[in-house]
Image 1 (spheres, one colour):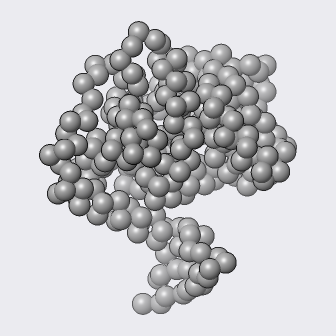
Image 2: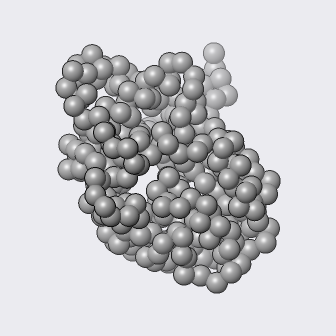
Length: 299
């Protein structure tokens, strides 16, 4: 077995791009598989230790909303993200052991051949996907989100790095503040589950996408392969709420997440909706044994 190593140092710690390989497998693929194995181990260990306790955190909601209130889903989602914005980035990377960064890079890679000059990132949050899209060397990236506190975190990151190509705006995915045919590409990462009206949001994005432009959606999905399915379900249902509460102070956000994934129309059901909304050349790419998926469609 041929192993090539570009060993990490204190100045250059090991990460998904360390440059090492095993039998031709890239460091990114190895990093993803190692981290997935760690997540599986954590879930199994937690099942043995915490199972009698965490069952108390099961959601009893019949509607897929973060809170038990009469407020609209849009209002509740805004409130939820405002409440966890201060720990959102840390929790994203911690709870996935960094695999979410690999998923974003793969989603952006779907736009490489298009070479878009103007990109819209909807539900941009703290701008992680917008920042990753700079790898495409566009002229302008605009990120929109309904949570001002998430945008504040994103603006601080952008200012710290001097990324003047990115502009963040408050905006609703179902009522985008842009003219028709304004963007070459539109991206959404882990956001379409939160739309109050999915088809309205997809149609609104198509309106501001130029003819021939591409939509790329990165979203959680439900793995179906044993034992990934069982471990993922346990981890999502029990471990996420505990750690979410511990680090962000919000149990609701991390109970809502698996519930929204459970009810999201994934796979071909989602591409059927894309086609119904007028998108063409739809495609699905499954990631990490089906834990997440990349969806593509052109106008």
